[in-house]
Structures are given as C-alpha cells and as structure tokens.
Length: 455
Image 1 (cartoon, rainbow, N blue to C red):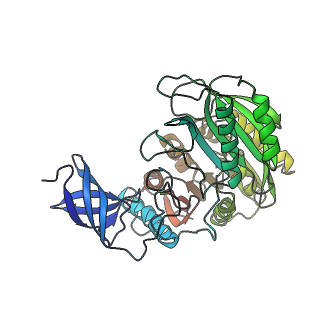
Image 2: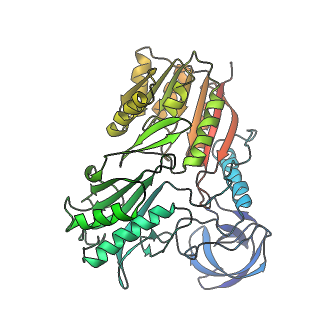
Image 3: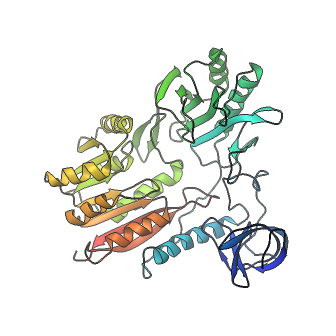
C-alpha cells in the first residue's frame, strides 16, 4: 500500500502528456516530475490519489542519455518550461509521440502518418508576447511567472524563452511600482491597482507594445512610467493602459487607453503586414508561424480557383496567406476588434479577394452555407477546446474537398478528427505535421491535412 512520504525505487516506463515520468508499483501508477522514460529513480511519494500517486525524485539510480541540465534557475518551481530536463531533440520526439498517442487513444486513428516535429534552429528568446503577473512577495512587489499548479508568483529576473525587451519592460514597470509605492493587485481581496505587465514585440518590424493591466483607468504619476519606457525600450511604438477590474484569471479587460504612441503595432510575416492590437490573438512564435502557415498552405494545395473559409480567423493571418493563392478567402471570427483589424490588414496588403464575418464560427458558418456559400477548402484553427459539433456537422454537409485543421491541443484535435473521419462524415486524414511553436514547454501545434474519401 503506497502512502505519502514512502521512499520507493521506480523504473520509468512511460511519460504523461505533461512531461512527467510514469512508473508502477504493484500495478499502481506513480507520476514523477522531471523523470524521463528509461530511467530508474529513488523517489518520495508526496501525494496519493485514487488512481495514481505523485512523487519527487530523490536520486537518479540510472539516467537517460537524453537528460540535460535545465538552463533556467527557476525551472523546478516555474509552471512554464516543464521539459528543460530533456535535450531539445528529445522534446521534439516527445511531442510527436503525444500527438500520436492522442490520435490512437481518443481518435481511434492508428494508421495515420505523423511526421517528425519541426523544431527551431535556436529555441530560445522566441516569444513575441509575455504576460507577467504582479503581486506582493516576501520583500515587497514582485513580477514574474506563476509557480507550477499555483498562483504563487516566482520573482524570476529573466526568462530565456522571452525576448529580452519583455524582461526589460517588466523591470521598468516594477521599478516604478516600488519607487512610487503604487499598490499592486491582491487576487484574494481584489484590492490594489497594477495586475499584469504584458508585452507584444513584432519580430518583423522591431515595434514594441507595452500593456499595463490595472484595476482602474488611472495610475498615479503614470507620466513618469511613460517617460522611463520611452527612454529605455528601443522600438517602443505603443503604451496601453488596459483596465480589468473583474476578479478571476482573465488577464486583459475590454477597455484600452493609449498612453503613448499608436493603438496598434505592425508585424511582417512572409511579405504580409499585420496590425496587432492589445486584445487580438497572434501566434506567439513569429519564426515558427511562417513555417506553420506555409505548411498549412501546402496541405491546402490551392490552385487559384478555390473559395476558401478560414474559421476562427483572428486578425486574418491564415485568411490573407490563403487569399494570395485562392479566388476568394472568407474569414469568421467572434472578436469584433479582431475582425476590424483583419479588414484593415487586407486593405494594408492590397488584398481584395477577402471577406470577413463577425460572430461565433459555429453559428455564422452554418448560416453562410445555408445561403449558398460553399467552399472548396476550409481552414480550421480553433481555441484549445476544439470545434463545436454543429460546426463539424456543417463541414461534413458542405463537403469541401480538403480541410486543413490547425490545432494547439492534440486531445481535442483527436476528438474532432474522430468525428470527421467517421463513416458518415466521409473524410480521412492524409498527414499530420507537428510544429514546435512552444519550445521547452509541453505544448505542441499540429497541422492536419484532411481530404474526402471520394476525392
């Protein structure tokens, strides 16, 4: 009987999709943070649940050849880069296996071709967006990242997957808060002013946006903060005060006040210019985004005569990529501000063969189809929860010759593929391409080429 504080020896025979090692004692599963498949460890049980236990490594009796020393001093506490104990090549193999396991276990797709994960030449300092929660530490205000499975803030001096200017902007805001005794947010009481520091950096143009998230539309002596940021952040194009008075985990509120510069910044991807606002979704890895979208277009096999849908289109990135190779590209997005930006982006890039619709994809898409707007190819890039069944049903009824599914969640991807590849829907998966958009984390992006079985 396994109990808390037991010391056990364990052969690690597998990995969870979160990157924890898995072993068994008398048939009972034990999850071990930081252990790699093939290792033998001495570990201490720290929690026992109904179906499994969680343990902490005390000693590596035998180590994996894929083990490496984490480069971040906050690795053991931070909830971000959970795979830093593996070599980068091993993390790519791990992510491919996660995708394959989900397709088999959830999707029932055992004979699908899953390519090797496309990695980065330099998997550091790749993030174009950072979100630093601000709170009170033992010695005063701190800003950093949440600890693993908690809302305890780790006061990390720097983060090697962020752009250096993101860390610099965070330090400037924190210095301002300390110097002028600006109250920081307490999520337990709801009191305080400064909640988050968010940065967006356009790798293609060098423009920087700094967003200060506060509980109210005024910050005492904010002009001093604006001066410091203008002086010390190269390429600063915008400072935004975002107002979020609501409790909860949502970082950004709906009200934006421009304190300096423009309301938006611009980035460039593969010759296209995109306007980025405080609230708009934009892939966080600009380098891999080009890889991702080019591969998606490859799967779409556009000839120039197709009508294309882009569901969950955001600010129109995939829509505009596709429009350059299609007759007409139609984007659907629920966020009004993003749709407005998508229309401006089309104009900015002199692309006239697009149209954009505001609303939930699972509502707008069926209406357009009912009104006779069919597509030859459909791109689907949903949030982590995947696609609504109404949308999948409409896809099956519309019967486009090809569907390109872009996913950030292998489990909901597998669920949706199970529907599309069912007997009645009439589709089959041609190819799956994992792309490492989030090096050193457990997350993986996938592009799936799907075609009709009768095509």
